[in-house]
Length: 330
Image (cartoon, rainbow, N blue to C red; front, side, top):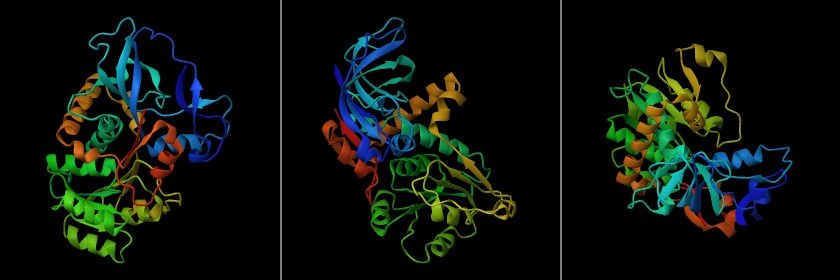
């Protein structure tokens, strides 16, 4: 037997998720490894999937990203060894003590990366790579164009700012509070940052951008602020939505799109496995590992909980002022 995070009824994740004793996974089959999990990340998308499940049926497992140590190797697996530490994503049911993982989803973890950071090694860094590539499709990005980075104090937001600096992409950060803005000023002193809880933030942002076009807005929030950020786009600009942290609707009128030929685009990391070629995925993984190895402080967790405290960990994800990703150790 092993323990795993499960739910057997519909409801708010903090109320329905629990740690249960479940059957241990069988010996790994062809192309699979068995992993003793050491830590996993709690992404908002994990909790959204639980909250949106209205017809639960049988008890369901949770989570898609984790890090652990290989305990068994199935036939057909090359290049990995028992005792090696690996991160993996997206592997359904990863919030557990022991899991079987397709070898194609596993990535060796360098020694210098902690478990708490390695638990975030794939999902967020790959999201950032996808966002950067999408932003660079606009001809002004990397030249005189500016990318507005909403929720810039999140793990993805901070990592995007770091990557943008490495690739000479001009960015402006947007956050929800003055405290988060002050923290980002310390991390990225040369990047303008604006808090939406301060009056006149849009005017100050526009003044900071000056004559440069706002080519792209990256927005995982939606709601009123998302719509306001859309209004800052220059003609031909695009808002890329990659989440919905704000429950309020994102309201646009057709003329908002027509005037200035502005665009609205959705993006999810789960399309990466199906849309990217094998060569692209290998390149992206190498880039993700290199970025995290060089900047592990950017993925410092918001908090670290033990498995038995899963309820508190889930509640922390929506805690006002949270910075970074919540991680659970096993």
